[in-house]
Image (tube, rainbow, N blue to C red; front, top):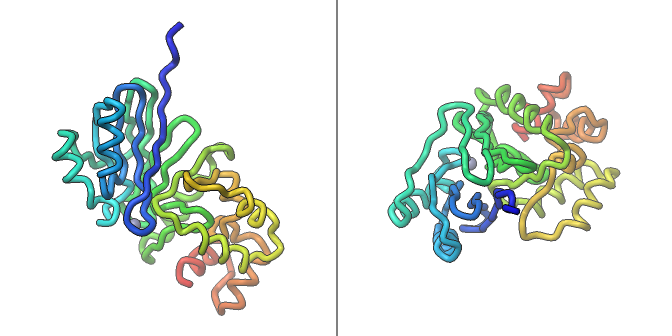
Length: 234
Ligand SMILES: [Zn+2]
């Protein structure tokens, strides 16, 4: 019987805390935010993978800086998404989800049971933003947290320790944060959508401790959106 092809997600680290990805099946793959592509290129060659495209979670230079080098080495094209689209590999389909907020051009890549979130959703944190994008950002996060709870989140940076310490400071009584931290064993740097709903203060703007934290910092807490906005402005 033929094995059902599957997509593997390989996370690799570059720079100080950037996380890049290779998604592949037995024969083909795509790179996302290849950064410093040395490791990725070695892996592609060792596994005999044909690279079908180079994608980015958004256009900030710390995410795109490896694109040209990897394109030159592999012959793969640098791709830009133009809205919701699907990348088809033998092992499965990847949905490119527009998630504006950190930047206008931010996207997430969703496969079967996982999502690569770039700087849109980080572990217990989110990327920074600008006032004109706050509304869109909140909408994008709402879409992400509507994914199944067990969906594995692969972020664009490893800011985990400082984000967790801050989340604990904001919600000292939240045992989920302590439990997450105790069982956190990178690599890979991952959480789940369910974890994020339980530990990420940006997704918990209805929680009294989070509201109290914002008030203590002199921020507007009138509505759910204002609390989210206040958090981004802190
Ligand atoms: Zn960024």
